Length: 214
Ligand SMILES: [Zn+2]
Image (tube, rainbow, N blue to C red):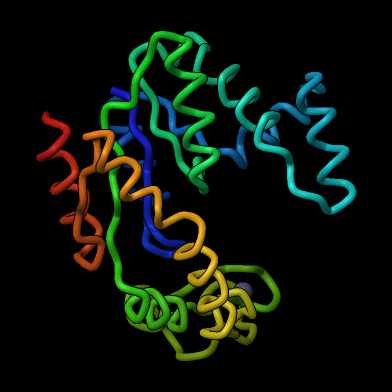
């Protein structure tokens, strides 16, 4: 079972990807983890990627695809994998398609966790983080015992810059411009599945397992 997760930043696709990986016993493959492990192990691709990252530049797609192909050819990926965080653009999707076709593989499902922008903005604006210990809360879904105070250490809770509506809106604009076109790309490929990501997360997951099968 080879799966790609799609969805806006903040839609909860990472959480669903982890749950899928756990239930179906397949690796959760995220580009962040792949970068970290290649850099840590000092692979040739990892060293090249680090040069770009040290300069604050984007890692070129060929390098990312190279590391991704190495990862999905490992033994633990033989029954499938869940890709999270890649592809993010049409050219990346095309390169990925080419590379996995050469490996004799195909993507079985592209799962789009669909959440409207307004919903994401309001969810993110409810997040709170402790200024001292980094513990995170949500004013609706995971509140601290005393509003504005960390349960763990008693310090003040704040809305991080990353979670502020203006920052979230900027990320969503990039998503709509570059990543959302992937929905049509995978629809045309006949592998797109839409799930309503506004539901409670266990309901989102049961909708996904209904599609993937027990
Ligand atoms: Zn704290």
